[in-house]
Structures are given as structure tokens and as C-alpha cells.
Image (cartoon, rainbow, N blue to C red):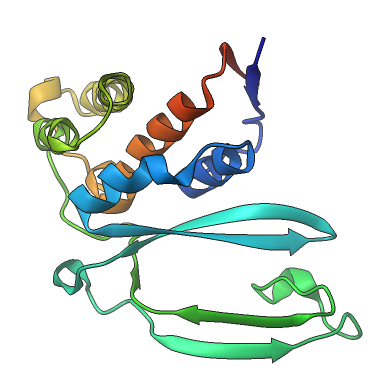
Length: 192
């Protein structure tokens, strides 16, 4: 029996959930329908923090249409050792090795149009997803929409998502549904 356990005591962002599912063995190729439909790119990388290796995922826009100028375009290189350098405050991970990376494009977090629940459903339905992945993603958005509707005292069909309707959030939710289906766990559990 394959059991997938999430430890949610400290919370988790969509990017963190995607990275964890990839680290658990999910195939990144199942994300392709999302990248084609939303004009986003998943950037998958490796990092090491305090000697522990992990996968990272960032969602970037592939279209300049939705960029609001917050993006950055730079290359940098660090030659670092552990002496006199506080790794926790640097924003980068260094294990005494060269550190190279390039940033091109706009990180998609919070970018893109804010959409209604019905618009998000339509976007997901128009993706070329496996039926089970589509069903799971739509169920997640329905739960989020019901919570939003309850808070605002509106009908589900009338609510507008803000962060959840942005491209990166849709990419996180649909991507997680696709990766989870790819892993095919018999059971999923989470901490309270």
C-alpha cells in the first residue's frame, strides 16, 4: 500500500507542494497541459539547506502580456564558502560550492487576471487534462470557491477569486492534482 503523508503543521505554498510531489517521484511531464493553457513555465531545480537536498519549483510567466514590471532579468554568480557567511539570511543556499543561476522572465506569483469561479472552471475544463485530474482540480476550486462565497455572503457562481484566480495559483492547483494522480497513492493523509 502506497501512503502519501503531508505534514501541514507549518503550512505549505503551492510551489512547496509541487516540489514535494516531484521529490516523491511524480513525472514533471504531466504538467505540460498546464504550461500550454496558462502561458506559464514550471522551473524545477535542486537546493540544499543545512545539508539536506530538496527540489524547488517556481512558476514563471512565459508571456509578457501579464507582466506588471515586477519581473527581473539578471544573471549572477557566487563563489561562497561557509566562513563568515550566514546562509539563512542570504536568500540562497551555499554548501561551499559555486552557485550559478539565471533569472529570465516574471515570477508568476499573484500575476495575471483575477477571475471568477466560473472563469477558473472554464480554464481548467479547456486544458487537455486526464479526466481524473480535471475532476480533482475542479473539486479543489469548488472547495476554495465555497469558502470564499461563505466569507463574502455570495453565491458560488458570483464570487471572484483574487490570488486563487491568478495564473500561478491555477498552475499550482492543477499541477498538484496532476502530480498527485501520477504518483497513484492508495491513500493520502495529512496532519491537523
